[in-house]
Length: 164
Image (cartoon, rainbow, N blue to C red; front, side, top):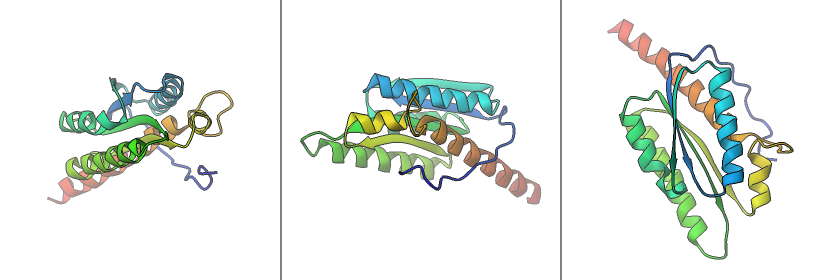
C-alpha cells in the first residue's frame, strides 16, 4: 500500500497562511473526496484565507498553480486524477502535470501540495480519495504537506530576515 510509512506531520496553527486549492473537474466523485479532504485539513489547521479554483483537467493544473503562486499565496494544493486508458495519453498527462507542478514550486518558491492521483483504474482513485471506505485521504495529505512546507519556509525566511 502506497500510504504505508507516511510521516506524522505536526503543525501549529496556520491561520495566517493564504492557501489556494486548484482542482480538476474530471472524475467528479473522486474529486469530491479529494476536495473534502483538503477542506478538512484547512479547517483543522485553522487556515482563515483559502480559495478553491476548478480547472478542466489535470493538464491545466500547473498554469493555474503558477498564477496562484505568483499572486502571493503561501501554498498551493493541486488535486486531480488521471486514469489509465488504452492510449499513451495517460503517460503524457501524468508527466506534464507532475513536471509542471514541480516547476511551479521550484520556480516560485511556493510549496505545491501534490494531490494528483495517477491510477490504473477508477477503484484505485476511490481507494485514495478519502471517501467512506477509502484506505487513504490524498486530498488531506497533499494539503497537510503544503501547509507543513509553507510553515517551515515561513520560519526559514523569518530567520533570514532577522539575520540580515
